[in-house]
Image (cartoon, rainbow, N blue to C red; front, side):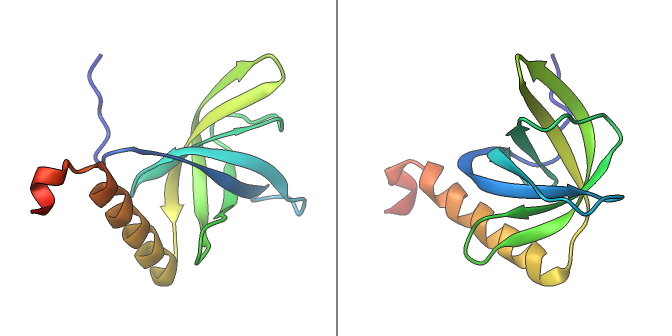
Length: 114
């Protein structure tokens, strides 16, 4: 199957949270991977394709933005979803870029760093 992603994905496991755009309650999730264009989360909260959510990734500094759910897979009581980032302030874009740069360096073979 052809991968149509514009950006490389990096596996990262950390806490994150989200709130539906039309709601006020914050839900917990686990971040599974991310790229400059999106992220994959898992949660016990039901999700539907097309919903927009405000998300916060629990990094230092935190990364926040607005994303649209583009796919959902349900396994037992857990939902895994792919989110496409649709809006993000410049300071959070920079924090995401810095995190991606750090993850990129960690995946390079040692021979590249000599």
